[in-house]
Image 1 (tube, helix red, strand yellow):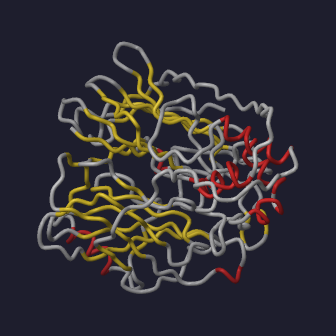
Image 2 (cartoon, rainbow, N blue to C red; image 1 turned 90 degrees about the vertical axis):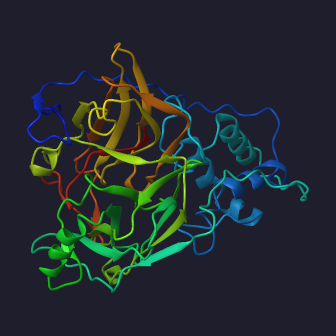
Length: 438
C-alpha cells in the first residue's frame, strides 16, 4: 500500500512540495549455505567464533535467552544455533551485506555460517583445546569520563486507555568548559519498560524553555508525546540490543558550558505485569577537550508524519512511506557534507527499510538497507569509508510496516489485536539519523 508522500525542507517551515519521490533500488543478499568438505572442531574454529560473536549477549546474566560460553553449552543448543545463523537472525546485525561496508560488523560471513552449519551437521566434534580465540570485532567505548543519572525514579504513567508514555527529562551538564562527546552509552534502569530513548543537547539559549516545561508538570520531567527527533544537538540513542556508540577517530559532538542534556524516553507496557516497575536510567559518556571535526546529526523524516500524516491501517501487511530532501542548504550552508554513520528507527511493526542518496546526476548510493527489521536489534552503523553528500544530492528514506494480525506486540502476556496506527509513542515511527561533518 502506497501513501501520499511529501518532500519537506525540514528546517524551513512552509517549504513543502507535494510529490511522489522516485523509489531507490534495493540490492539483493544471498542467503545460501554450502556445507564445507571437512568437519571443523569446536576448539579450533567454532568455539573462538562463538566467543567473539555471540557471548556478548549469550552469557550468564546476559540478554540472550541462553548461555553458550562453553562446549557443553554450544552442544546443548546446537540446533538453535545452526538455525539462527543460517537464517541470519543471529548475530543480530540487520544491514544487508550488499549495501555498503561498516565498522564493527559483528555479523557472520557466508564462510563462517557454513563453518557452524558443518560443525553441527558433522556431529559437533570437540577437538583439541589451546587454540587462540578469534579476534574481537572491537566493541567498547573506552574509559568513561562522565556519568549522568536521572535525578529520581519515574514510574510509567500512560494516558487513560493507552499502554505507552513518552517522557522527557533534563539532566545537568557539569562541565564549565566546552567538551566533545566521543563515546555514548544509555543504560536503562528498567529495560522491561524502556522502549527506546533519544538523548539530545539543549544549548544555553534553549535551557529556559525546557525548564519551563519541567516546572509545569507535577511529576518528574514532562510529557513529550512522539519524542524529540530534531532541532537539537544529538548525542545518541538506545533501543534493546544497542550497546553504545563510539564516534570515528577525531570526531565528536560539541557540548558547551551552561547546556543541559535532554533525555526523551518512550516507556511501553512490558510483556509481563511483574516487570512494570519504576525506571531510573543513566548515561555514560567519553569526553575530550578537542576534536578535529565536530559532528552534526541530521534527522531524515517527513515533518507532517508526527501530526497524523503516517496512517497505517489495521490488517495491512505492507504499508510504505518514503521521503527525500537535500540537507546541505541548511546543515551544510551550501557546502558538501561528509556522512559518517547511519541509523534507522521504527517500532515493532517495522518490516523493512532503507536509506540512500539520489545524486544530482541521477545515480544512486545505498547507505543502509534492512530487509528484516527487528526493533530489538537497532544500532548506529559507522561507514568504513565516509560518504560525501554534495549540494543538490538528496537523502532518501523508505520504511515498510506490517500491521497484520501475525505481527503484533505482546503486552502483559497478551498479543494485541491489530488497530489503526499512526506516528505516536504507542504507534509507529519512521526516522533516519545520519551523522555528518562539514
